[in-house]
Length: 193
View 1 (spheres, rainbow, N blue to C red):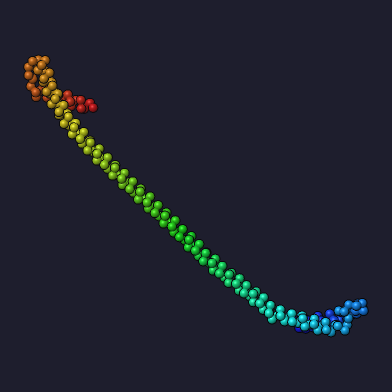
View 2 (view 1 turned 60 degrees about the vertical axis):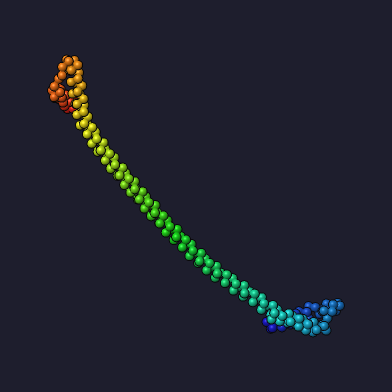
């Protein structure tokens, strides 16, 4: 870098010496060759000190800031990658929980459906059994009523018939004969039905 500054200064000196020699006669002091060495000295001194100030003070701060930003960006990228991995893990866990919950809910629904069907079938079977028992009981009662009612009807028919014959003929009739006739008529009627 020092060589570059020296070469730049030398180029400036040559440039001013060749091109501006004629303008020194016109009265511009910066183009007068007797002031050139002082001007070149101050030029080299100012630019060298400016170069050293930038190189030693500002450039390290700028480089440090750039490095800090670079490290911060790298750290932020690493943190975002960790957050992304954590978010992906949480999403996977969430999806697993949802799947497990769906399966459990499906099992619960199926179990409840089976239980409900079993309850319905058992209650239906109990209801059918109760109906069958009631029908059997009613049929037995009807049969017993038929038997008792036929005998009761026969007794009533015998008494009414003997009473009617007694009132029509005025004499008492043998109840066993009337009862035999009534039983014979009821058997014939029962066979016809």
